[in-house]
Length: 429
Ligand SMILES: [Zn+2]
Picture (spheres, rainbow, N blue to C red):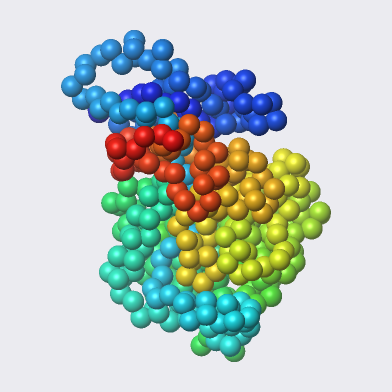
């Protein structure tokens, strides 16, 4: 089995509290959940982490057969877990640049959708694209995510909106997952919106989602999760319940697009049904925060989308964190409301717009999204046995991930114990 040793790590952020060393930051900035080790090293064996600790404790462990060892020098920089993006709509064709112009001239997202644009535009382009074309576009976006340090990616369908086209999108994800370096987690989002040609028979469309799409998705093993866009312009709480209950019956985990534009009651429903994640939450109330605090549901916030849509409403991230809710931050990568693969930038927005500390933002890109994808302790953490996914920053403190606004400080990425990218010329600043 191949071994890879990363030495000379100035600050190793494991997100594994057991190894945390306090005292390197002022008390107000010291978050034990980060599991920080200074002057550290990391050993990977095969695709898993074998050991993390102080570099001075390394020699005895590394003093075996050297032939299969690769040793890399982190040059005093920071190493942290590969990032986890738990909400993307990565499989699509076309773009929404025309709509971007309209929004820059004052049109709202909802006005554009009512006029036949928005999701419908992407659905038309995606239906017209072949599986091969979708595969190439999605692969390109995955490569971009990797450059930003993202090693686990949830991917939703939802731009097919018919049985044949929804299955086409999920088959693209399945094909990619076979060869992809990243861990891909597929989610079925047939209930993204009612497609234009079915507007007059929305009940029949929900029937199709429940009686045709879901059973086929489950039969072919095409998705781990089922998601619904619960919103006044999409699906009601009653329709959302029907789809999610059917999905749960088939053994799928549940996620919900909830309270993005209005308060609908989707969060209470999600908590009641034991959903893994509720996403957006710009319009949740104090009762929803309490319900989430008493649940295991992760709150996934998408500040890139509210920035891109210039929405005034912000989710109450502080109230969620202070009441003990696991909070994740995600790109929501999609062509209409947040066309970015820059997950570190989303962390910056968490800090600057949602009142999160850099430590909370990092946990929101690692531990919390991993939990929401049923992979707690396996990804988004550097501890023995976890997947050897890691990010190297050419800077001495992890905060630079968020401080360098819009500029990725990612200088290297390990995926499953192999070097996906490592800039050997980089010197920590
Ligand atoms: Zn979304």
